[in-house]
Image (cartoon, rainbow, N blue to C red; front, side, top):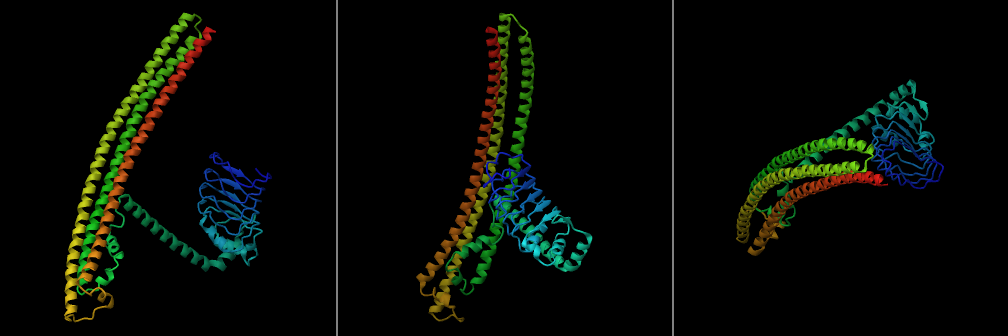
Length: 473
């Protein structure tokens, strides 16, 4: 579709098998509407009015792209096109050499056309490209000769090595981040993210407005360290239990899935054999009936076929009902197992969070004793060291001290309660959603199967009716 003044790329979503698309010499302003063309390999958008490279993220099989003679100033948003082999982007507005560095990620890039861009006016442009894209074979329609490569290597060797070093560091950082992200996702799947360290303890004090002031109490450091250590140990218990529970749940789900699929596959094999036997019978009968001239005899055969079709339908329906019962038994066993598993985990978690609250209660009591004792010494001027100004604002009277310590205690308990509630809500929601999804999938499968049987029987009966009608005529 070229030279037809197309302004917008649209109505291509259903051409999912398309591998080549030519849209050059139009007035297209945006690259869009291509997200479903995942098999596209070759695309020509030259001689249009495109200003930004975009909308290509799903084209992972892409190899050949022409954006020649547009209004593009930056080479970008091509990261998903790792199979890119040919890029023609000449006669645009590309002016910065950094665009060449962006292309280093495409290991399969062998042909590049930048002719007609302001970048080509840069001194040693050709040598720069040859140095930073060492696997490139053709640049601006010409073969990169060995002399050019040698000159490029000699001039830019150290600069390229520095870029390679930076790229390697970035790759390692990305790899480490990916591992971190995967670990975090694993922890989230287990509903115990950020419970493998002091994160809960830190959050308790992060939202406590008087935490920093109370931490200035004499002798409180040792109390806080002990509290933190014990709280972290309890959180780690929940974390370890969560990962163990995830492994058990995953194994249980896989076991259920395997059992269900095996039951369905076995049932399908039996149904296929019954269907094949009936099809052989039906086709043979059709041939026989086509040769019968006696009306009474033909009617008898048609009646016999109707009876066989009814029996066939009953056999398939009975087989489907057997499968429904079998899957229901499998599902009930799975539901019981997963419910017991989750119930045990919840009981364990609730017990450990209760210990966290007990620990906070003891810390509160000890902190209150220290705070009141410090207040008494301040009142009697028995305190040897000078009280920091922030702490002094609390050590006014007994009510002020008690209220501050109690408010801190309430904040801490609320954080513990919130984390427990979040965990329990998510694990229960996961189980509920899983069981509902399995049930809904089975209902859909059963309805589809019954519909298939009914449609096939209707086809057989309609065929017999047609034969009966033609004989009457």
